[in-house]
Amino acid sequence: MGALLEARNVVKHYGSVEALRGASFEVRAGEVVALIGDNGAGKSTLVKCLSGVEQPDSGEILLDGRRVRLDSPTRARALGIETVYQDLAVAPDLDPAANLFLGRELRRRGLFGWLGMVDKAEMRRRAAEQFQRLGVRVQSLDVPIGSLSGGQRQGVAVTRAVVWANRVVFMDEPTAALGVVQRERVLEVIRRVRDSGIAVVLISHNMPEVQAVADRVEVLRLGRRVARFRAADVTLEELVGAMTGALHQEDAA
Figure (tube, rainbow, N blue to C red):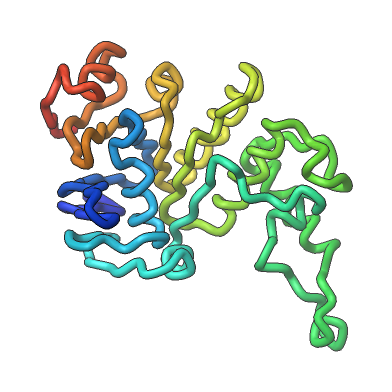
């Protein structure tokens, strides 16, 4: 199966700083790919380029084998690419359903919709349906999301991305600051998203988590991809070695 989303030799400068030095990356439909690397490796910059936040200075980005220009997050979302950021970007005073449809609110039919009235009942119904589909446990649909646990807020943020994505979801440290039980629930959601046919890109520093949920691992170091592994075949020592430079071998996976 060919790559769904691919970066080829992407270069990105910030003034005199070269954040990406010919970075490459690929993810296929229905798989979880972990993107790992030490601080300053270029992970965040590459994800920004692949999600439309930043534009590369050179190199190619391909979707379904065709070169695309992701000149804004809006363009990326229109192509089915969504991102769950580490800070979640949720509205804490709104309930889970309102957060799920934030910026994409459903209008009521007829005159009320023309007047701008939101169909809260339908949004809540659809939200409950999506939470159930992904196995996301939400304490209540009637309370502000800020009152929910960290794991539940993360579940809502992931569900929001999945509802609107039909190609790729980027997840930046989705289990950071979560307890053991909450972390496992989020990982199970990631597996369900993968099983639905959507590609998941997981950015994480947690190597046991990477080995538990990823199908493949791609390693960045100093702005370049230096290694690729099948997660089932790689050891923790090999991952750390690739990240630190002790192992430099780009193995096709």
